[in-house]
Structure formats: structure tokens, C-alpha cells
Length: 226
Image (tube, rainbow, N blue to C red; front, side):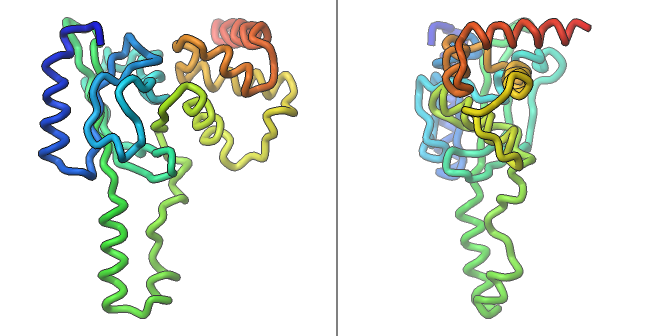
């Protein structure tokens, strides 16, 4: 963990996990340890993450945009687990004299309640009516996902690429220069390249050299300055 200022919050993670119950994942992250940010987690079965996991794409973006300087928290947005479950997520910025020292996140998994709602409807409607008229798998909201929960840098990059190009049939091994530049621009804006090793991982995903990724980043930076 290294930052002793986060020590009191570790007990809070365990406390909130026990109070709120098994449908709430509580995560404490050290923003200065981006590749191994998770220092405490309760009910990690919800996202499949564990201590030592990386920051999420949203956390990286919030850090890159320095959003924590203008607000203390971000609440009630959609998060997506590795098994495609949508969660209601909220983030609290832990600051010390304006310095961001921690990120506390709460992710609520409502899938059990959706299943229960369906069972209740089966009691008063024919099963076919319920199946045809009630949607209990909110995949239509995937485009509204703000955060992807992953356990490693490659998984994070995969999730960002998937969510960014959900409705496009893109073969990563057949991308032209402009398409690769566009993807690098998206990943850069999400803060992916703040993490050590990200350049190599992205180069592997896009089937190009690390030198090419650095050239794309240089081009992106010049375009932003115009």
C-alpha cells in the first residue's frame, strides 16, 4: 500500500462490506499505484477482482482529467463486470489538503433482485407473458457504461476496446494507421497510458510495435495542442 494515510480506510472497507451485505462491493484504491491499485476489497466476488488489481478505466480518466479537484464524489453511474453484469457504482475521492491519496468505490449488484422480481411476476402472469414483456437482462444499456471492472491491464484494455467499438465490426489485426491512431487517442483520453506496461500491451493488441504506439501518442498530443 505504501501510503499510511489510507490505513484507517481499510477497516472501513471491511465494515461497509459487512453492513451493506454481499450485493455491495467496496473497493479502496491507491491512485499512485495504478497497476496494483487495490489495497482493500470487500465482496470481491461481485467483480472478480482482488487486492493488487489495477485501477479501472474510469478511475484512470478521473485522474487524467483531475476531476477530483472540482468535486468530492461521483455517484450512481453504470459499471460493468467481467461477466457483463451491470452495477450501480459510486466513487468517493479521498484527499489530503487537495492531494488525491485514495479512491473509495461502492458497486451494487442488483441481479438477485431482478431475478426475484421475475419470479414474483411469474406468480401472477403466464411465464410467456413475463418473458416477452419484461427485460431483466439490461444489455441495451451497455453503451451507457462508465466503468469496466477488470483484474489486469490486458483485461482493462480489452474492456475499453470492446465498449468503445461495441457496434462496430473491427478486426484489430487489420486496422489501418488512422484507425490505430483513433484507438490510441481513445485509450489516451481514458488515462490507460498512465500505467506502466500499457504501451506494450496496447502494441500487442493492435498488432504493431511499441515505437508505433509512441508515434501515435506524439501525434495525438500535437493534435490536442492545436
